[in-house]
Image 1 (cartoon, each protein chain N blue to C red):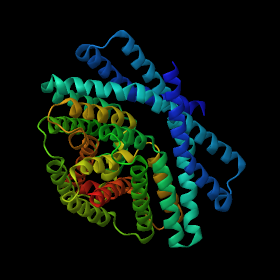
Image 2 (cartoon, rainbow over the protein chains, first blue to last red; image 1 turned 90 degrees about the vertical axis):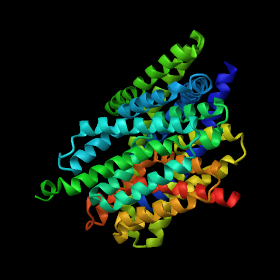
Image 3 (cartoon, each protein chain N blue to C red; image 1 turned 135 degrees about the vertical axis):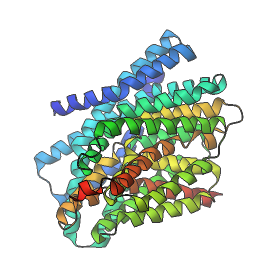
Length: 242
Length: 230
């Protein structure tokens, strides 16, 4: 029990330390330039208090729940059941993306930008599938010790090429989409799992092999939305231009 | 406000439930944990759900309006330097507050056993976000096509990746994606929307791409940190 309470105290301290500079900055800006009315200010500061309080509970919960669970699961599979890692990575990537609220927002955004040409549901499923594939590849990367450079350089080169072929409305959406799949759950759980695998797997290096997963799954929607943009530019063009 | 909380709560449950189920199955079937550990995992998950609900509600109430208010105020000062400095500072401080960054730093710390200073990492990440945000806000003012910014920064990243020590490489890329979490996204969106609403001649779509640009910042700054430290 005492360990539990020091844990939450430590997290509270960390959170207050990390959010205080932002609050001070906003307050100064408010006093000097914004001069927002009191009613609006009350709402803003209540929101900031909620944010800090929620962050404390969230981080404390994650530190005692998803993070150790991810590490434990990763270490277990890394040690004894390596063959399962690729399908497990696939399923977890799929679940994490399908459930992520900001991915749904992104899909609606694309439906709108394409004037309904790309249905949001179809996009949700294909996108989740794309992320799942990349999560599976990043498990394979740890097991077969594929250097991160061999994955990220071709990935980024591909993005650079697509950039010149893609419909220009889709460029911004595509890069923003990278941020949509890396929600707090995906980040805390998948990352701790990958690091767990790399720690337990003999011959793998926890730092060089364990990290990189989040960057790889963020690449999936970027490439995917740009491919849609290329398709729209060359095939859906008439519908868009009218 | 209660409706906001309810709606957020539903979203959080929707996001966490499938993953929790999968984790419980994996823990029970494969890892074979005891009942005590399972209960403590579930208790922690309940805390996570409550925390995330409060966090996201708070973010909706505060971060988006703060971003919008500051974004709409910026062009009134008629000074590019002022716009750039404020955009830099705001995103710098938001990046420091981002909980995802906290999780990443803790993971790096436990994997590296403290061989890189945590505060140095956080400040480099925040510096990268701030710098790229200042550049991208100026882009909105000048109306430079976003394509060129992405092409230039991706080319620099590609070049640098051949010189960065392997320990830093994966961490640098991860930190880029991690930074664009629940906290910074609404601020950046608000900033973009606020600016665009005042500079009326720009199309609404100019606000897009800011988040993607923000995630490039930490990649570059951590890569530089890696090159310098080797």
